[in-house]
Length: 144
Length: 144
DNA sequence: CTCGATGCAAAGGTTTTGCACCAGG
DNA sequence: CCTGGTGCAAAACCTTTGCATCGAG
Image 1 (cartoon, each protein chain N blue to C red):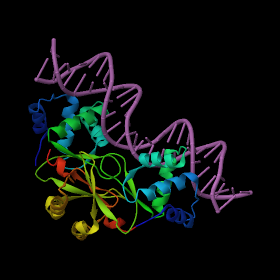
Image 2: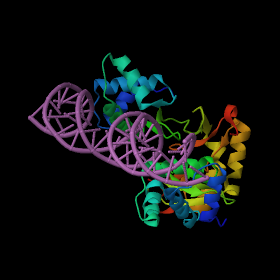
Image 3: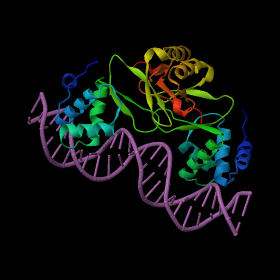
């Protein structure tokens, strides 16, 4: 739950990946963000501030991809717009996003367990909604 | 359920929209596709064959938008990749798509009613999953 | 005749890729 | 060293938009 920059850096190294200055900055930002959801662009901005230099967006994407493969983070598609990223942890959750204003709510696994069970029993599908959000309308934007 | 080209054309007209040759071809393809899911590109290809000429992709998108506004079709985002479209009808359903092979299954409203109720009761969100699919892994691709 | 629809081209926004150079281990 | 990471630029991908022209009603 309390993942530090060093934890991430160590995990990179033990996955056979190299620890570079851009990566260290990205890890620091991710660790500091706890489990909030960041877009690649936001991550780039914060990591550049952290680093005191610039980082190419492609580097951000490649690093995120590496961390994803290493199982250290999840990237989530929130309907329209860019996808977001957050560190993985014991609190893995689903996402509920408002298609009007983009407001998101985290939904604990238990809440959707019933649906998952039905879809798996009935269709054999394992729904991965830690990766894709449920899209709808938040209280402030219900009904057209 | 048995929507014909003429039904669609008539609906266009009564929505104050004009019936042009490209639109007629697109309506014919949609009617012939029954409720199968087509991408804009696939629709363009089929409609051009129907028409015996070319139709610009922007025309396809604009026509789809018009039909959508008129309530005649739904467009659905299936995770990654292009979105698909199908005529609306009494059988409105949710979608379950495999993130590996793209296979999709239609899920009747009743099956997910429980989840919808929970999310609305608990978070006040009205989930619109006729518009956004549930993404997961189909039986042939379960577990990584 | 008038306004909506079309085609073409260009841009939009996010993500990916090719390539030469640089640097971590 | 040697392989993998980086920046830069360009492309890929789906979708939208501006604009002059065309054609349905």
